[in-house]
Length: 209
Image (tube, rainbow, N blue to C red; front, side, top):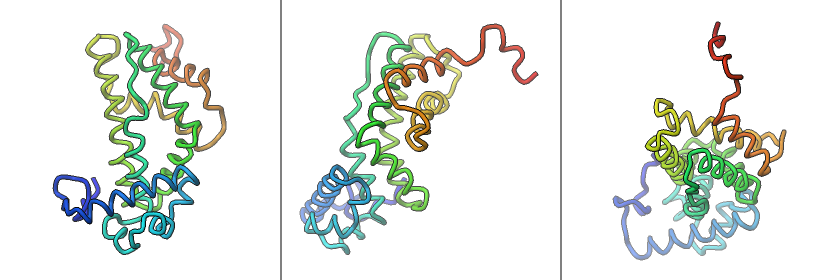
């Protein structure tokens, strides 16, 4: 977890009105810039100019522009992908893979890819990206998995983190490499392969043999 600055949004941070207003202005300005031009547009100079908050104050609250962009993006996307409830594990998880695929294929998906790439060389920004965006999304998908476990429709011995990576990892790979489409049919095919397996029936005994 990122170390909370003195004036941030957690319970331990100061709630001084000026500080709260400055943070709100910075996050709003950053979101506007991300929508308009992605991460390249959300420079600290640009954020400062649009928000009216000094660069020194921005750096007081966040360690890098990747960090502030990750928080602003995560805040915007928090409720963007509501969980499906189709009545079955296959239906729910297939619908969620399709929704996530649509997200990655959108402008917001481009910002996601840019933040992911920036996080490779910005460890502090990466912490914000995991905390403010990934953690919420993975917790939500974990709810789908737990629902399926309680229904007895999936193998409860499979770790939820592994299940998520198998289902959604291929989408991120396609987003970053561009080697294949991110469309509804492709999302359904990925979900089907993940949920039903790649081996033909009766072939399990040969694995590792």
